[in-house]
Length: 167
Image (cartoon, rainbow, N blue to C red; front, side, top):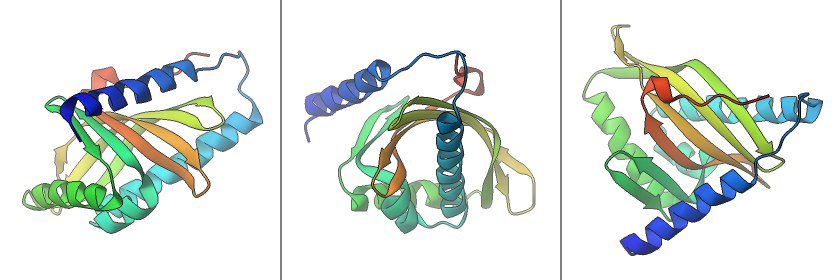
């Protein structure tokens, strides 16, 4: 895929998410249910990541195509094999630093509509000796599919950029 085509896809995903926003002063029980489902999908992702299961991440956590919008540029994973390879590399780099697991420090879940949400969180990565390896943050666009909530885009950022939902 060309870089210009990749940029167009990224812009379309972000534009679609911004159009999907809804308003309302009271949180409905449907929103609470969706937030719980998204949190469960997030927790499954962290369990798979901590267990070094790039195959599970590729098959059950991410939707393809998916986007990683990093400070170094956009990476598009067109297939589950692309997602698996990306996470094998990421997990391998952490393993070289004695990585053990990742826990959520805090997470905000913004339900945009019945099929779109953003989870923005800070998490803690631990070494095998129990010390903190890092405390990064990121925001993740989730889409509801027939198979459940899946991540379609992730954006790493500093903890002071964690998004909050308006009421």
